[in-house]
Image (cartoon, rainbow, N blue to C red; front, side, top):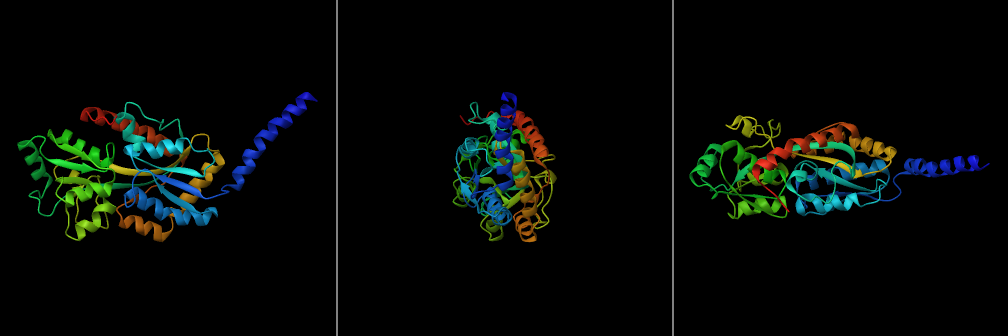
Length: 321
């Protein structure tokens, strides 16, 4: 009788989890964004939210929690209930660069999260003021060599892909630039518009309108591939910096111990939302390449990114503690 009671108790403990997963979600789902409004991550999240909400039967809302290179948002999601109702729009910063940039990270990018899916990648655009004397990456490199440390570049914060874009440029050319971090990507672009800094690696969504309006001059893309919607802009790798590749990426992650059934549903719903023509077209227009894959593939990708960025950060000497 005692053995039967224990078996029943074990079944009672397991059953609610499975039944609950089948009923997910029971309330609105939050996607916490590591960067401010108007950033590439913010635009991507909001493009997905409505379509995901339609499929889940509950509202999906974006919540911006910028700061500390994305660590504030990541820590908040790490501490959330592992029930699928709070997700993180993970980035190359939180799950690639920051483990090497911060001596004390308030989360484990592998152990504290359950990967859902890699969503998209997006190159940045090296931009300068239209009145700048720099019209090519060679102009920038020549000036940096002539005046070490005098040329400034802004970013949306330490550890962002904009920050490391400048670091990789230094490493590849043997030059020294001065990094000026801001709290968000739009602020870093405003610094160039206001002549506070000389250049920035801006995200395509932030830079595109400014370049097309003549308020910024685009030098080149930070990724390896050209963009179909912006064919005249070439990758820096084709403009004198072979192999230059600092690509931003975005993916959904849940707190660790989120039930597998919930992760599977979130993955399927995200893939469906990305397949909607209006969403795909909007993201392509923002310079994003939609990616595919399951939780396991995203987990392997995160581990590879951590390994990739560690030597780059070490060589830069950058720290953010």
